[in-house]
Image (cartoon, rainbow, N blue to C red):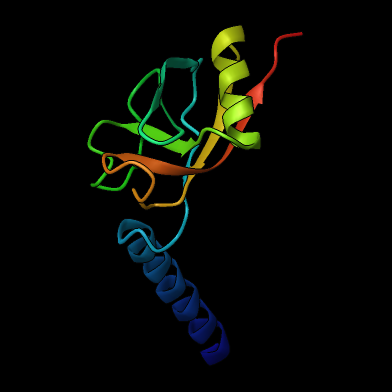
Length: 119
């Protein structure tokens, strides 16, 4: 019984510390909001940077991402995916941000994005 209580306590403590880390931007932030979502805005800005916004307000973003947008370097696989998805109106299923706004000061840095390609 004592072992079970100790395990439950560890699970609770780990769960709470994980939530605190996510809110303090030390872990990636995953957005899997249900419903049909597409990229509603995309632009090239600054020195080869792409910023974009997904239709609908994300559930969780760092406070620095006040515009509810994501940013990624314009050259690279993520940028290629975003450009094609915007042009082809693909649905976004999962977005993972870094929890930081280092690429563009008011947009979360993009770590990964998954699309549902039309059949």
